[in-house]
Amino acid sequence: MIDFNLDHDEIAKRKQLRRDVWDYRPVDHIPVVMWLTPSCGYTLREQRESTEIQFKVNVETIRKSLALIPDDYIPFAFVTPGYMTIATMFGMEPYWSDDPDQPPGTGGCIIDDLEQVYRLSRPGMEAGLMPENIKRLRYHADNLPSDVSITGIDCGGPLNTCKDLLDTNLLYTGFYDNPQAMHYLLDLVTDVQLEVYRAVIAAAGGLDRMTCIDFSPTWAPEKYKSFVSDDVCATIGPGIFREFSIPYNNRLYQPWGCGLLHNCGPNPSKHLYLDHDPPMKGLNCSFRHSHREFVEFREIFAGWGVIEAMFDFGEKPEEMLAGYRYMMETLAPDTIGIPVCIIDDTWPDGDITSLYWEMRKIAEEYAATMKWAGKES
Image (cartoon, rainbow, N blue to C red):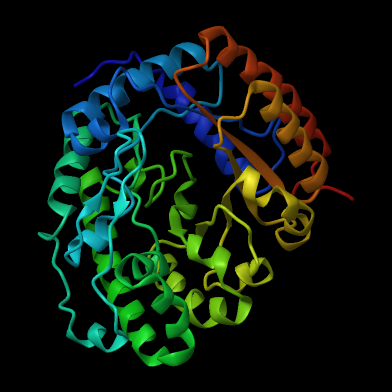
């Protein structure tokens, strides 16, 4: 068991801040999330393909984060082989480019005629990358203290899996040419994803041990642990989203209650987001791809939702600060915005700590301007 000399009471206090913020109860500041991603000398491919290397990098990331982030940090281990697990369970192979620091995907497709979906067999938990995922989750759970949360494995969502399995053109024409087959495939992959989530939660040691049920490193309060990725919804209109996304996303939310939807952006169906059952709690997105929609998010999610905006394009400190101030000015006083600052090896240690304190100033101003539950307008 790795000993980080963690202060259990301090971590409990930081979790309570998250609970209060997500429930729109008054706080002195909005939490600032800083996601350090040191490589420890390993390529991304080496990290994603090896349990031992990913564990080593997670340990060093936790140590560095504890040393450099003065507040708000809730220790977590990022456990994933890449987003393509469910596709590999149906027989696809991971695809790596010539760049070992480029995230993996899948190559080609296994369906070029939608009638082929009726011949697909439902895979079990012994298929594809799932055995390695279970091993990796258990290894982290067994060797890290209970105050370290564990992420889910990055499953993508039902439409994301269809995007991997189908010929690209077929994905979009199928909505119109053969909707019955599309619904059949979506129902099948959602069945598999539900089973995957249950296996992931068990391997991690229970839902309370996890940040959320999927990839996000941001610790979510207990009643908001659901998380569905739906990047395909950036490329479809509201009518297709209502018919082919919402019903299957709902099936992933319902066992664990409401939570976040991930879509980097843009968000053409944003006005339907709260039509989920249960209503989604908020959006995890890329600041770069979604920031132009914050004014509309303010109205859509007022008094209820959480917008987690990731600075995930190598933004410099001054860009993150300007972006966070923009978040506050466009979302406050009605809607919570939480910055997720992704920080790589190129940052000097002092710049990381300095950024936290500068972001914290905005976080305190943000909290002071919010319309909290029960607060007079």
